[in-house]
Length: 307
Image (cartoon, rainbow, N blue to C red; front, top):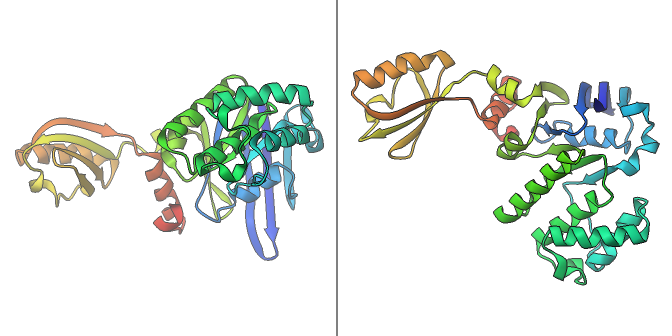
């Protein structure tokens, strides 16, 4: 069952079209990746989903045909621009936001204790926000986003400012929330995170959809155009191969991008003919980062835009 469905949603600001006829649906209990270069229309789309701004045309519907005014308290939103009251203590600011979301104080207090412990911040509850590190403040803002058990959680660059240990902690929290039935919209530039977490993705560029669907199917549709090899000695003889578009050599291991997915066969023969001592040869699906860049470039964007 879908939690949200967008049908031909369009938004203009003067003569500028921020979003052009977007249509996609998000299943309950899934992690959905909303991707795109800067200025693609991601933030505008998220703001329309939350009814901060209204579409000029098209329709956004919620499960069981609920009106947005009856759904807003069931949304948790972590914006890219963080916004906690810096002079307030951690406990006070989290409780204040919980009550804004309609949580009774008694219930909120119990949940705050649980979440501070989960996020390894129990001893920081009486500190002011401006005494926290950037990563700690980020985790507090995540708590304010999910404390009221929202059905829909919107996370815009949630890993920003976190070290690898806390990135893993936050990732585990996201998966746990999904497993408990929450639906998550995840917007980020870090394709590796999307690749590991998302069930489906929507890639938009200049307000229009370039790719949308199940992540696994999208990757398969691009074919296996990359090769990983391990070797002994040197790969100098094949550096200028006519079949190779790019070669990233690490000494005894190389990542090689073919010009077309079919070029791996003649390339393998060339390795044999030129007596390159290969101990492993493996075809690889393109990474989501490669798909992202290739798709944007194919529609007039640049690598800098995509990244």
